[in-house]
Length: 397
Image (cartoon, rainbow, N blue to C red; front, side, top):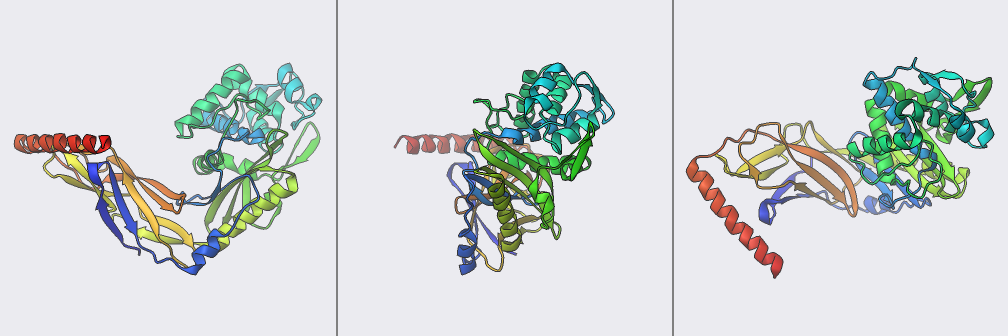
């Protein structure tokens, strides 16, 4: 196991870890990979490690990739008991005209003024990328598509995906509808982990509705690479994009590409990224379960520092057959105020490989720290005032 060296930074706000894994030639080969996609990211689901990224935080047009957020809202409604797969959804004239067969876009060919069970709507939404299904679902949940889009935005923001903004349920062009590749990857990962039964719809190869059979638009499903879901999209404003997931030997990777010129390039770049990720990386344990990751300063406690640990072991993916120098830091607002209960989340461990953030996980108090005596609290207050004055002086200089 790689050993970590704890180095507290000034001010008690940041703590720095140096993870020493000697740099080897294999690292340079792994990092030489480049995707032709203007926007791309490859994420390891188990560790949250980012294996590759390109313009992953730049805003882009999602097209039908926005339907991941549409599906998320539906899944949440089902999980909350507000809807079931048997709930009947009305196909309004608005849904039919904007998203049905007369619209010329992707559709499940639902019949106007018919009622369709939510289970079938979800298949039409996910397998067919049906705009009629998306609009009908939006109207059933929120009354109209604009209100539903606000719910989509609120729900993804609640997951911490705060850059994404949705203005409709379909992904149709709107100048204010934007996402990032990174947030789409984490949204996909959330769906996979939180709704495993419903996620299976994303891997369904085809679906027949109104006597019309349509194949799943995700090209990865037809490839022998372990792919089992998610979504494609394309409109003139963004080009061709894909969010996909695949599993090999128990390892799940999430890939996002967008901005490609055609469907062939979209499929090719997504496949290349997945194959490269499975081939080029291996898992390393950095901290065993229960092992102290670092420490944080405590104000007014019986002890001045508290040990921090993760929940479970801390694993990283590194280039296969080689090792590298990783930079990591513990971020928290400090010093912490006593008392601090064992198990309280107090900070986060951030690990980077070059400019790529490979891991971000919460850290918890490994012990309880009770409030100190009056004398201890007075001394801490004096020290905090002094160090605060020094920090302000350094900031001015």
